[in-house]
Image (cartoon, rainbow, N blue to C red; front, side):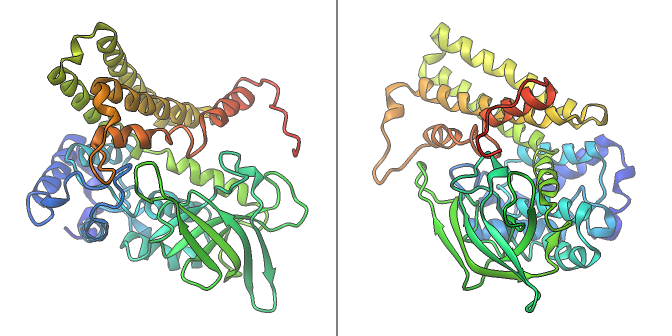
Length: 399
């Protein structure tokens, strides 16, 4: 399927489009890619990594990457609901976890909204073709969920026409595989909080960048520490105006909580259904307290899905919706991990040789991070309290 013919697809009915997505994934995952079914995902990011990169390139070659981007930038220009359909069908098909989502779903839309024509021409085509992979340079040891506390600095070397970056980022997903990083750095000396930040595009393969993998509870190392020591990037590789990076960074976070979250919830549904089946097999379903918790999880997941749909409608895209959605799904998934341990009972405390975790143990361990990364529960509650309810700001000594 060529990209030229794909331009006409948004005119098809949603039902027809769903069948086209379903048939493409069914045929593709029944052939040479069948061994990738279910590969990757939280706590299993290392599985078949290079093959999943090849899979992403296969999707791109067949017109199934960047489906929400405008056609003029190499996307499909699909409607909101067709994007939702794609992500739902992708999850239902048990297709492998994507490796190019940071470029496709976060940086790409950010560049389309804020980038210069030159930046779009340079970076969007290789993102769409999965020729360059990206990581996100936001969190720091002293600025995790509180992003405005960023201390990584960048100065403009006017003679060389380059930004020079010094500082440390942490919890940087796939930095060890990425070609580029979008970095929030402080470019105005003496600035505080959200003022004086800039959004820089920085190449990772250079002497001034050191990457140290972080060993996680799951035994894998998706996350990394990244140290910038006189690292350099082009003077023209700042997205938006210098010193105005906070707004660009917030826009990126809003893209992160877009239509793909509904596909993620299809995955949650599959996990819950599997856990209920496991409870029935093990006899723990007969415990009325545990059964009630599983039923409540089912109800809460339905509410979560309806809330996400509401967030995506134009009439309710207020400042608090993204925080509500993040707070709901992260807490729900963490509780599912806890339920998995209760269903397993004492067996949940024992793993195989060489720290061989089963799927439920891996879910429990990784889901502990769900309420931390991407803005912790505490930060989301503060946003809702201060920006939506108008309550007094939390005391911040350095504000």
